[in-house]
Amino acid sequence: MTIELWAYNTPNGRKISVALEEMGLPYTVRVVDITKNEQFNPDFLAISPNNRIPAIIDPNGPDGAPISVFESGAILLYLAQKTNRFWPESVRAQVPVLEWLMWQMGGFGPMPGQVHHFLTVKDPADQRYGLARYSAETRRLYGVADRRLANVEFFAGDISVADFAILGWGWRHERHQVDLGEFPNVKRWYETMLARPGVQRGLAVVLS
Image 1 (cartoon, rainbow, N blue to C red):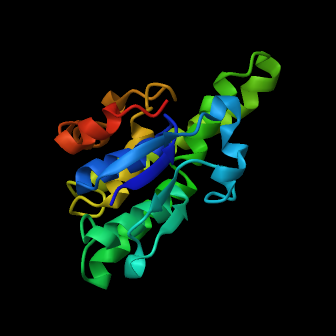
Image 2 (image 1 turned 135 degrees about the vertical axis):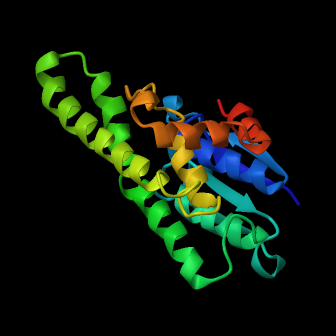
Image 3 (image 1 turned 90 degrees about the vertical axis):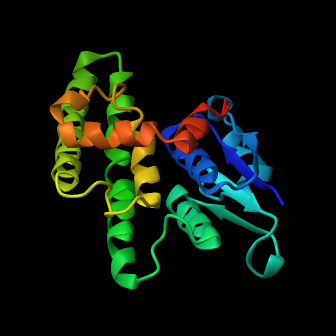
């Protein structure tokens, strides 16, 4: 049965379209146009009470009963455990997946997201402090990623849902004014990810 992906063309939406393609799961897209405040529609709030995309409805959830899941990190973990793909078996191997997934959810997402916001602020007096602060933190996070990827091919060693989560935001590096040439290990990882057919399909699917 087909999963419903409720999403829009944002980094968080792209995490899930990429994961669904990589996992080979059939799905349909329900576009939630956040430019028209559709995230506040009652049918969407019923499955995503925080009025944020993405969310999914899996008609073949645990025990065969339907289930809805909101929050991109929770969705990635749900899909990984559902398919037994991009999620290691041992607890020891799961730890770095969880670490880097939480790193993305807590930092490498909120921080470049603030850069996106302050770049749209017209008044330089209002823009200056916020843009400087969040740009510096975003670049710090790229440095963290670059040091990690100097020692491993993917963030948790083997490719995992953590890579899909981080890719969603790395995909917007130009928008938050980061040159990947300054972070060669991130650039190598990013190009490796983009070469994957599933990633290509996930980034190409229409979400708006």
